[in-house]
Length: 104
Ligand SMILES: [Zn+2]
Image 1 (cartoon, helix red, strand yellow):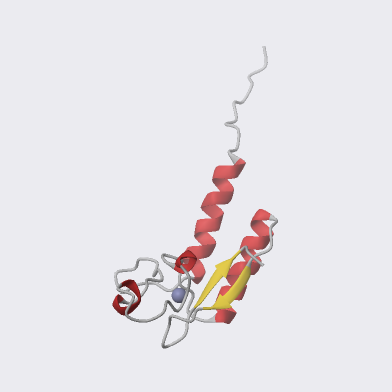
Image 2: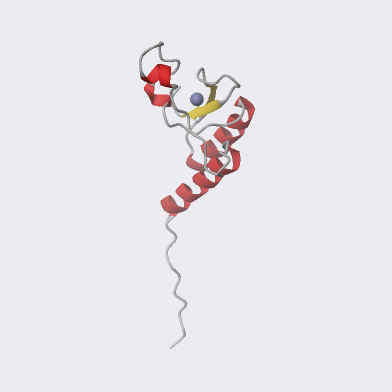
């Protein structure tokens, strides 16, 4: 009887998730501890002392250093999952940063 090689089936959705994370890691801003930086409302926003600069959907989103860099990540993520992604500048940042959304 010929020896059959056993191949583990490829978990495509798991692989896409990992590749998506790799794209995010490649483009995202990192904290000085090497973690991915995320957008948080200022204290003044959280305590309703000023109007929110971005809606709650932006809270916790991955930060990209510039809109151009976010566009690069958006293109790669769109190609990976076959769904359009859009980069947009964040109103919350003084120095400027951007996020990605699948909403149009
Ligand atoms: Zn932001």
